[in-house]
Length: 375
Ligand code: NAD
Image (tube, rainbow, N blue to C red; front, side, top):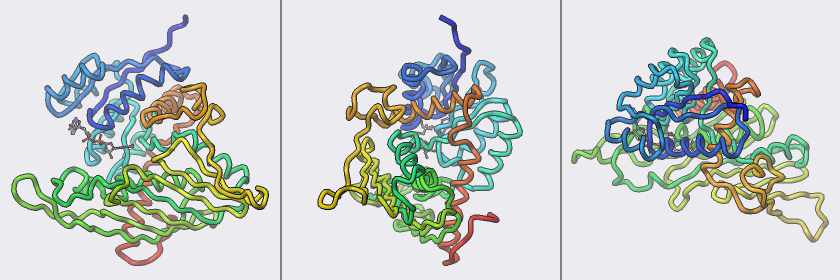
């Protein structure tokens, strides 16, 4: 068997996402015909103990408590950043300067000017980039996009998008990186996914009118005192797409009871689509062409008809899981590194989402509609 070139991975951060990325790197070669063999070279976390524990558990060859060690290893080709949002910029710029490809979790940066600086640096260095907008890797979203593009819904008139979770509901929860200005707030942190999905399905958003609010204005600092919180807990916006369709986007991390409501509804002149991430192996389709008396939303179950579902499972309805989306994301990035296809969601695309986040907040402060053009 012909051996493939090796691609070495250096992972920064071993929390929720660090682990999910390793699931992606380890299952992608078993599911896809990748252009490279993947080698888990080195993992970094903040202490030697954490890094060493992750090395053993996740299967890396070595560990370090200084992420800069990853840059010095010539056998590391991809720096994978799953650290808190405020650290993405420094780590990505250093990785690019070392000539590494960069896989970075969302939000790319907490300021769009930073995201642009990272984009320009990557483009100038000629390295490939990928931002972790994994929900876009769902085969059911690709299918929805294809149905819209094929005109199965007729003329698209309106869109509703939401990303709601309840992990910030508790006022007594201690101030963490997500509460910091550099953490970005609910819109940057989770609403960025809703914006990315909206544009993936309907094309670019060209105008926004936002309303962003801080509901819990202070949180325990973990040292007996309280710390002021200035970022948004809740952000709603009206949007207009370049196509002329209009819509709304909600980002809410105080949505009691909601665990992963990354949902959308698309309404067209001949049909509609509804989707909920909490049941992400289903798409609901309504068609005005159905016979009178039998109209209603029909449930389309994920199946091998919805590529690349069939690479994971030959049987319909057996369902993919969250970590499978990361495997699809990894496969797309590796193909892009090999020059087989464009980067699925590169830093420039990540910049575009961050620019929308900032525009929504600014339009909320200024209480007026803002055009994306010129920003
Ligand atoms: P987490 O707190 O679970 O993990 C962060 C990890 O980074 C921890 O292991 C921490 O010790 C490590 N870390 C912090 N500073 C470091 C440093 N200087 N050097 C090395 N390691 C360091 O957080 P998380 O939920 O995994 O979030 C991480 C990133 O992933 C964030 O940017 C977040 O927005 C993003 N995220 C994306 C998704 C998604 O669906 N794509 C979901 C959750 C989080």
